[in-house]
Image (tube, rainbow, N blue to C red; front, side):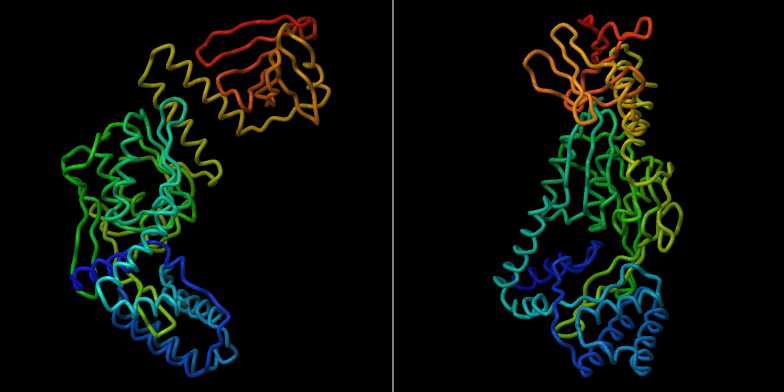
Length: 443
């Protein structure tokens, strides 16, 4: 029993691509010259034994020893400052953004004290509960207007504990006509979760996603889409993946896989550039090092995104990625669905998104010209903005979409257009997302 749990715990802690140990403790505990030397020797040994490229692992270890000999660390007496400096020095040599030295004496002590199956299960349960509090990375799942699914995924976590959440999310999105997957704040995670989510985007014929080489065992592994998933697959709907320069590691693999399989359109920024998976290794009783011990080898390109990142099909700033992808999805759907009602909805949403992008501003004189009563409707001007009110209902802020046309902040299905005659506002025309209108003359 103990052996089985140990392997599970090891897999949980070390075999992820997630941005490392977010719960590690940075403290102000002091640091002796003796400990600095011990840490450098232990970190160097881990790199020489496990880093994916042996010659670079040895080069990093030698550089730390040179730095120590030259006195680079002699003024450092703070553990947090020291681990940051070591990380910087290692990245300077390797250019590998996955490498990180971690100061976590409590975490190391907890692992060493977990000598029974019950101890290890408790550690695992605590780890899973921390992940559960962030809903295992599934930050937001919803259906946008126009029947476009949206998934804001902040990390790829192990299906062994996050699988049910992933299945629920993917099934909620299963009736969408298009899908937007937001990875702009995703720092990585588990290849197995990539495999699970990707499987919903293809049919049941296995698709080769990626290959990995592992230096410690001198072995290769492959990932393929799964032959079975719980619920409905949607292999034919358009998929858009949003990326940023913070999109990293497993999130990059997901993007890279779908891009090369021509299954998704990437929208946003070039990703961070980390393609070497690995795990956390104990260096001393207070320091850990996250060692990249493997590398991804895409079956189509025979390479990966290390150091270069994954470039998008449509390059825009991160804050423009969502609107851009949403508009592209609507345009795509408008080409395939020619019904009048669908065309009206797609046009309506696009106009709103483009108006939001333009952030149009009108002069106070222009805004004041719309103020007045229009039958049961009233337009008022307060604190530099127009407000719409019907009867005794709540006031709703109006946002300009163009001259004489406005959208409502809290009524997405309703807009206003003002009718002019002889340079005077004579009526208010209510426009609805289904294409119908009504009209009230100005009192």
